[in-house]
Image (cartoon, rainbow, N blue to C red; front, side, top):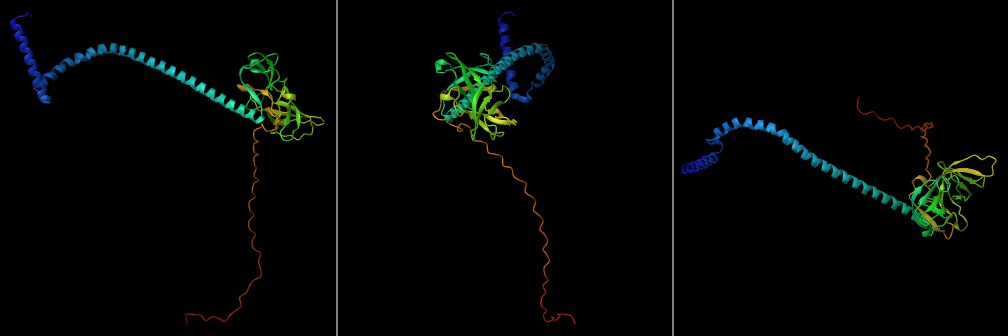
Length: 325
């Protein structure tokens, strides 16, 4: 259409009519006179719009799916990273809590025995210098450690140092078959020699073949001169079996160690022995024996009363009947 005076007047007229129709439609609301025309237009154009949407929706859905998938993938990766970090924090917290408990137990044992200890961490476990049951700790001669020092933890006797380097040391565990230490029974004081049994209980040969010993009795280290290689009073284990020794001069007992050698982490090396033998003072209080109650016999039924002499009431004057004839 050419830009002429007539075309401009026509355009102004159409705009004015459009504004008039919009005003009438708004004021009319639901009863607008244009409602029928709008409904007819919707009836004609609705199927066309739906068809176009049907064609366009798969493409739009695909784009939306890729967008959402990328968002979900990123969120999943973020959650995975957060879960990994949380697990690491929990593991570190549990490890720190466990080591704090071990250190508390170690200090309590050292305090009860009067031992001055150097704490160290187990950094390796395995054969060394021909021994099959050894550990390596992260302390050595630079920390004042020397050969034949006693090694303990919060539960009791771990072993003794056999080799020392500037920053590490090798410990022969009390479970090694080549390990031997003097031991003493709690209470009676009977002494003997404890030998490592590997995966099996330790064997203790008591020097007195007639010593009174039973399962559950506990032993501590007897001690060595100047506290090398063993300081006195360190808990060793408890008796689990007494072997028959008819005609023998010694008595052999099997002892379950207090220390779990496969779970060692934090240990203490006794660098200064106690001033006096703590005897049984390092052992925890003995568990109270279970009190067995004898079954109570049911009460016997009461016997019937024995018949006694019959009692008679002295006869009195006859009573006069009342009523009747």
